[in-house]
Amino acid sequence: MKKKTAVALSGGVDSLMAAWFLKDQGQDVIGIHFITGFETALSRTRHPQADSRQKILDIGKQLGMPVEIVDIRAEFQEEIVDYFTQTYKKGQTPNPCMRCNPMIKFGRILSCAHSLGAQKLATGHYARIKKNPSGNFHLFKGLDNRKDQSYFLARLTQQQLENACFPLGERKKSEIKQMAAQKALRPVTADESQDICFIKGRSYGEFLSAQKEFEPQPGLIENMDGQVIGEHNGLHLFTIGQRRGINCPAAEPYYVIRLDAERNRLTVGAKKDLLSSECKVVEINWIGKEPTAPMDVHTRVRYRSKEAASRVFPQSESTAIVHFNNPQTAVTPGQGAVFYRGDEILGGGWISPLS
View 1 (tube, rainbow, N blue to C red):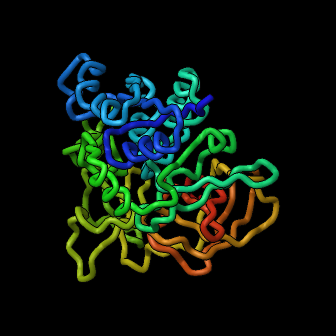
View 2 (cartoon, helix red, strand yellow):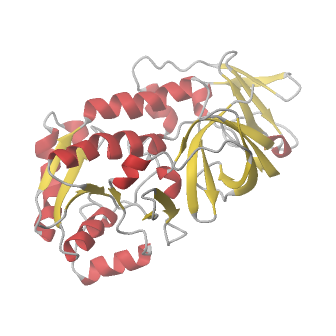
View 3 (cartoon, rainbow, N blue to C red):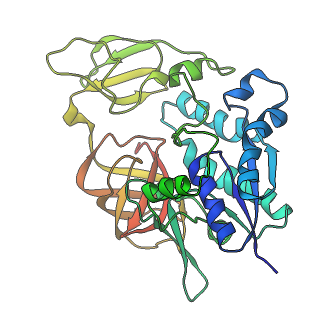
């Protein structure tokens, strides 16, 4: 009997080629396309399934496989968009992709895959999974360093990794695009995956202002000495390390240093004030066994940064203090801190204010 695998289809070249590789291996493949309610075409219709079928079923025709359309608008709004909004209201900067992967793709969509008789759910992520002789699963970076997406998968559990499949992990993006062209396979969207898939054509501030029960709260800007030097139009318009939009004239450019939601104050300072020698990480998902003693790792504090040599001091099963060997810039509450040992991802949690 053929092994049956479901593929989460976005319409892009990565998920298209992930499905092709599985088909080429002789597997029984079924596509799953999920509707979030934030697709560009769907904003103008009350019939998302019909609208979505028009653009995504072509993938199934190209590969000769069935495609299921799954409406997850309610779950996506509650688990991802509302989380995004509430995190900004707390004066932090959210990372919706790190939440979406375990809760939506390898939560709701994985359950759907199982209900359709599939053993695993494949995606177009550039990452790798390996199983050791003891039966435990390990997550590794993708072979293509420029496209590696392991950071966003750090909160997957052992059970989710057991049910996950990343056919592109051993390949490079340039190779994937070339192969798709050679085989005349056509993605239905030319867009590259974006960090925030549900914000299109608007700024974060515009998107947040349009959400229910979100009212921008103007407040004061202060410097590192606590002196008021200006006014802001809402903390949701800023993130730590930001330089633009502060609009306070000074001899040296100001950077956002801190967002105090309780006082609705924006603290700005010099570039040197962005440096942090440590941070607190909470709600950590350890892919393997959680550490009980300090350990040396490399920590990545945002997707577009390099891992930094550091030491993790566990405070509980899911909380730790991270000491950086060299101070890091713009360590931002709400973002993900992901722990690496070489190419292996040990786990990840949320950066939290130290105080």
